[in-house]
Image (cartoon, one colour):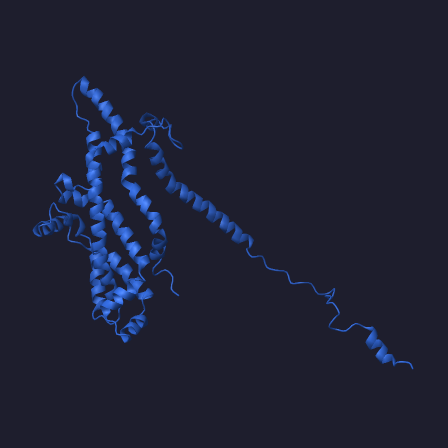
Length: 327
């Protein structure tokens, strides 16, 4: 018995499902677009060169101060020091730390900085949170009033008279209280609370029975680590470098800040009194001493901040971007 031709052809050919796919010779895969164009690559190269130049411009002065502080002062003055230390010499640091007033200045500056930062946050954070709530009556007028203080001030003499009448002369509070509530800090904190603690979150806490103070302490503050670190770092750096307020408000040497002590040390080392031949030799020695401790003083004054900053960098980077990105 013979099978029909139609059945023979169906059994002899492979099924459509088992037949491998072969693209038609006329069809070609679509050409993929490059991830970056030639213009983008050139833009990246230019940006890289620019950033390297910025790092060198900013970083080299810091590096030069560091190597100059441990180099021979004569090599520094003659221009021999530009990349590596020449004539290793740490007498500058030895002379600086041999002064007992340096440690007094360190102690006082640390106390002023810690107390000042705590007072700053204690004033700024509640004020910023209150101004960020739509339920606060008159918040627009208060914000404009605070903004006005950024543009105009009473001046040095009226401020001095106020500090004197309050009995704060020659005390810690003369350095800490003026400027404790910064207008810039309040406005930045207001922007942070507006974005990070929305009204809906505060309303949900109110429904659960929380008052305004509980909402601020239990909800807003735990979410405010970036702005707290940013405000603390900015204000802390200002207090650490405080010189002018200490100069006009403090007269007791035991209450001098570090910057005031270092300034006095430099002035004494650069004293150029004139006299006989013996004074000329003393003048040369004083000039050498001034050159020796000048760069060491810079490192001593800035080293604590350079140590602290890496620990706050993560929060600081988030805090300075407040208001620049909105989701």
